Length: 196
Image 1 (tube, rainbow, N blue to C red):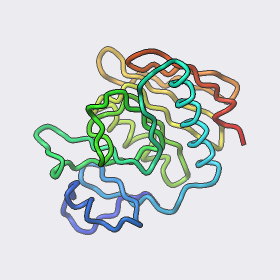
Image 2: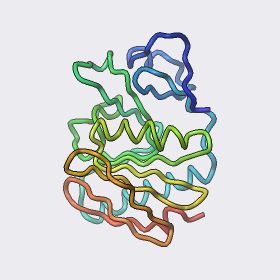
Image 3: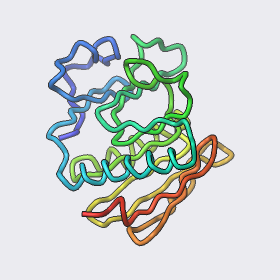
Image 4: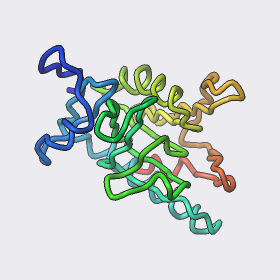
């Protein structure tokens, strides 16, 4: 049911967000709250765990210091002149990789991660493919993967020199994919990511 839930015409901020019940999962995009329930499917969770594990393993093998986080993990994306309290965008990507320790605090990540992956479901596919694509491009997330569990494919978007996402590269479970991070490139075997 991740459709916008408007309590009224008011826009919400991170200051509101932190007061909402812990047992509820929400995201804010430009001040509009999105309900993150119900819980994702079992295969969604398997893909998330497999991808997070593969990235973590590859980072360790290459001696990289980047950190991998799985939802729920708050990523605050403040606009110009927005403080933590007045930030109107807080998302919980399925997988985030953060290479700059200065962006991390006990609340999560402030600013764009180096990589984000979202795993679609029938209720989130529009938000993942449109709203979040535009949001992550606007905030300068260097690489964004949209994972389609039903088809076992990944649409990989990378920022170009104009700071825009070009056409997506499409990968399937038979492929290996390179993830380029600030301090080097790692390779992910999608057969392992989509393993059931």
